[in-house]
Length: 148
Ligand code: CA2
Image 1: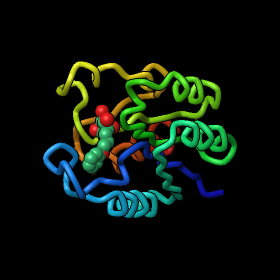
Image 2 (image 1 turned 120 degrees about the vertical axis):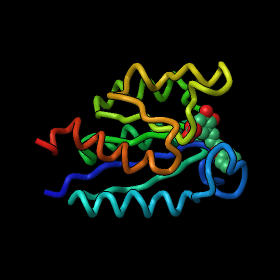
Image 3 (image 1 turned 180 degrees about the horizontal axis):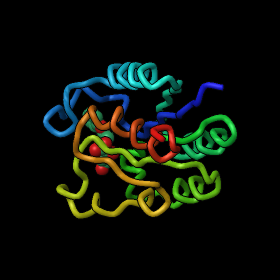
Image 4 (image 1 turned 90 degrees about the vertical axis):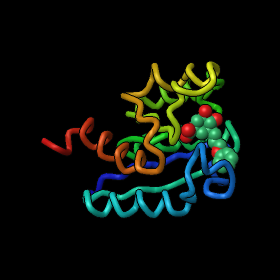
């Protein structure tokens, strides 16, 4: 059966490519999702891409992912720095999650240095812009043992 990965994007990421290109790049979310599908095809897997601006909807997506997806690439946006609910959802699903950020959150404002996702993620990729998404898919597949 084809392995499936969920690409989950949080608040405001639907605006990518339209504002603040100096921080988040000029690539739109649709282009990022196309990059993810292309990398999935190269790797012989399938991805489903979902974006929501709502914390509870992201929690629902994580709950529903259990038993359907082998793992999740999660850019939780600003909820990264605030959401105990997302942290608990990841813990409860026990699915491997790769935390992803376009920007290098550690080189930005102090409030972005704290991540509620990091302690429950298998790892974090940040600072590589849109290129981080295919990197995150590769990292998740490596974690799942697809490279062995
Ligand atoms: O670097 C990332 O990927 C972030 O997760 C993006 C979040 C930010 O709050 C995190 O600290 C780091 C913000 C996403 C906002 O996206 C926009 C895109 C275009 C225009 C305005 C906002």
